[in-house]
Amino acid sequence: MKVRELEKCIDEFGTEIYRFCMKLCMDQANAEDLYQQTFLKALESGIELDWEQNPKALFFSFAYNLWKSEQRKNARRSSLVPCVNLDETNENLLSSKENIEENMFRQELITETRKIIGNLPEKIRIPLTLYYLFEQSVDEIAKEIKKPPGTVKSRLFKGRNLIKKRLEESGYGKQLQ
Image 1 (tube, rainbow, N blue to C red):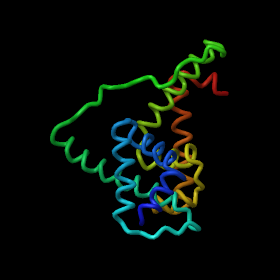
Image 2: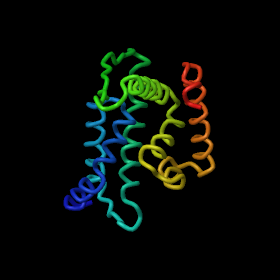
Image 3: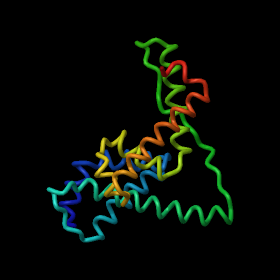
């Protein structure tokens, strides 16, 4: 891949790749590292991009594979010495124009949903993130994670049900209906 092509890719879908990295890492510093590593890997790979074949998917797969490799490395390390991330920030601010009670409920629901999604197994979390956040089709997700489309559909179904079940267990069932 040439530098000019890479610059075009960053301009075209760099923001979406960064959001994907944020959802994978759930930490800004690690997401920025993953984002940079993704484009560096693309540059080093020497792959010629075919703009007819959805080049964005190539970058999603680079990011996912780099993240997965990092997860394996961290798992090996944490088996030796466990580490804990204590930094948790609130990203969303209340808007003064909206009803404060509804806003608080929505913020709590978003926070609870993020926690639930963050605790889901990666094999369910990744398809959910790609499908709902990045609006990728089931076939595109299947290609990226190298699983059949039926498996992706099954994982999406299981993920939705797990989220619903855990939200209901947390007391959000009455408001969701």
